[in-house]
Image (cartoon, rainbow, N blue to C red):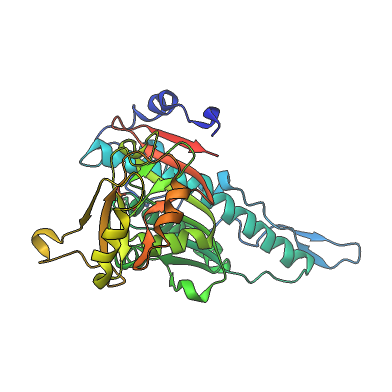
Length: 342
Ligand SMILES: O=C[C@H](O)[C@H](O)[C@H](O)COP(=O)(O)O
């Protein structure tokens, strides 16, 4: 990790505080100064003459910063009921702006260039994973705003979102995004998701919402993975505060618990219960159960994961040793955001 990449919370604080008061700002989804839906960068461009006199269209320049100016300004967002929620939203918006917009700009510019030079069109879709939990909700919101603001660009890029479970499927649909199935795509371009713990090297523990299997499938299928969370999730070592959620085939949980107890560092295992809304254990989107397993602080997440995944009955672990995570954004309690960008 390059510490220089930690964004300065102080700098963000000074930028955001003045306009961050209740009642000030622009409603989410209203691009400042631009009518909703005004596409920029569509293949307009001024006709220019070729030596032979045939008019061609010069491709318009599409940049991430150009696109961003058409979106709701993150410095003028209305406060939510809770400052921590506001900072989770800010973290998510920054994550999408900093990583998704450049992707859109690059792919669209390429598409325009192909059109103007009669190169073969690139018809591979732009596929993005949308994870689960309370923080990634704001990523879906920003992606929805981007789609509403640039409908033609996103249409031309064939923008598709992949869910990590029931909640995330609804998030995608409610934000007006197009839902796709992961098994229809060779790979995803990018995925956004929350985390229960995240260390400086962007290893994570996930699965607090029992969605870890599909989350791992989506994140590993993606070229790039970006985490959004709040400051409580940033830890020195995984296992500092959270147990590891482990998805197990229901009738194997006793066997799995017995095997777990033989692994060095094992402290405790608990079958997650549904609580007041579900008699008996939590049932995942894949109809399995969750064991929350405590190994204390984890020195080597990859090594522990490979020991666990060998146990018959374990479908997947909530340990996410970093494979492709490029950045994490953490909302602070005072409304600012810290980031780690590798
Ligand atoms: O299974 C759920 C996921 O791993 C969530 O992404 C994780 O629990 C973080 O959720 P939240 O953003 O609500 O803290």
